[in-house]
Image 1: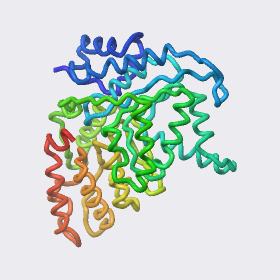
Image 2 (image 1 turned 45 degrees about the vertical axis):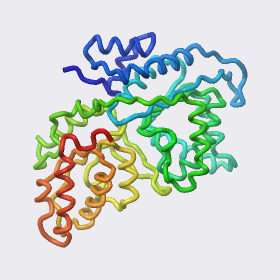
Image 3 (image 1 turned 180 degrees about the vertical axis):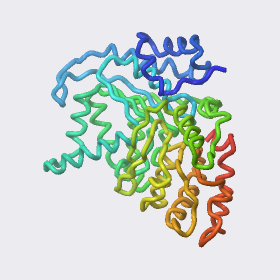
Image 4 (image 1 turned 30 degrees about the horizontal axis):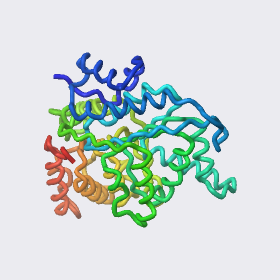
Length: 372
């Protein structure tokens, strides 16, 4: 049975010169992916962007001191998880022939905040300006995975940042699980953020990938979700799931939570992986886990130990983490010392852990999280 090609195969598309639709047809012909009408429906929009970006030539000196190009309207591609948005964006990215960069949106915003911090240390009044100037000087095409705004600090700066990038002729293509009007929904001071939504709708073509098929779930069909005990087989099972999701290309990501940075050991295209101690052995709280549940649609947790009085604080954090993942319907894969009902069998809190054990059982269902 043919499967979907996800971003793990980005390099394969580099050998094609032409349109995204050409690359898509070649992948179908080679049996590397199955045809999906919803994916085919968005190919013309990607073809338009690639053709226009490659054809654009510097027209005049811009305010950033380089040849400015006439702006090319980008693309905001949104839809449910596992629909192939990142795969198609990667096809387009491989065919773009101008200076370019591809980032997960959370990682990109971390880079922006670091750049602004350095600018402030130099006494720059408008710290966004040098960050935008550097980006516009280095790239003409930016591709983002998973655009979403969960931090008020991000919400306050994205409008001015992207205005400068667009004015400098930078073309943006991004994926998201949300329609633009749902970005930063219910966020603090959201009225200040609303002009950015209007900017997206003006500067980017908004296209929904309205597929009923979750290809990511199909890739993982039959795969175990809860591996126990903690032995070589459990590690191999978790590695196999991670390889399917990311091809081993993931790297650390940093989430901004109430002005702090929370590092996640491995992250790519909405799939995250971290050891239990990394998530529950640190002083993290509900806000941190909610941010993780917002950013990741699939989470792998390695090495959940036997829980009890000796690691009571870690156990409490684990309960909070599972609650956040459950409410957000994040797909969970984990390796653990024992089955859910036997993870926390004695000591303070063992009775209350029953609800967490029940949720762990429910989250093992193959259809858990589908269609969200």
